[in-house]
Length: 221
Image (tube, rainbow, N blue to C red; front, side, top):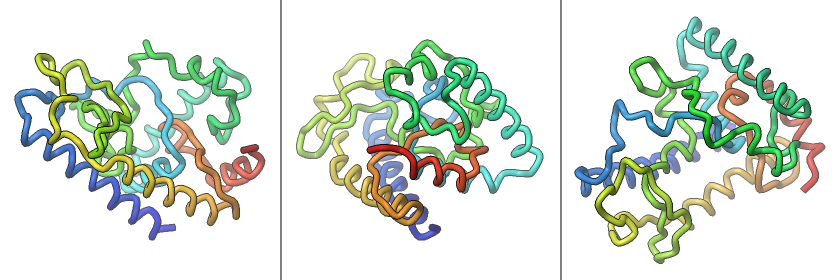
């Protein structure tokens, strides 16, 4: 599995290079930088591939930090089970109807991510999910297609970033390569291909992956 995670890490590095280039070209328009954690709030879904890569970073943290984070992750997951009793270990979102997802991750939730340190930095920054790396700038493919046309309200306050061609990136190709890696991951784990298995960051830190694999095998496409 390490070869897949290494390949995914290289893919994520491409995103980091794109974002750093955008910041270098438009520093006066982009507020994203060390110390800003405005988007590190609430829950959002990440892929199983993201979860495994994040777990790699989590496992490198000091033992006492991991113990504290695991306890907090379990506490938060228990709270989500109270919101929806069907949301139980291994806490895969795909076992829950999508109509019920919003109750588990309401937009107004401002709870800090449990990986957010007191100083405003991410404890597993080098291993953070794809979503964390993409947030803040609209995702416009080099073809001009707008894949996600929203951006952080702290950025581009006096300009429309969609007008800047140098913000564009090969997102369509990037996401296709991500999907290929994800499908290969699922093929190795379960013997079958799926396009989506999602969970939350707290689950990624405490999940027993043998139980997750068993649960994935029971999911219907």
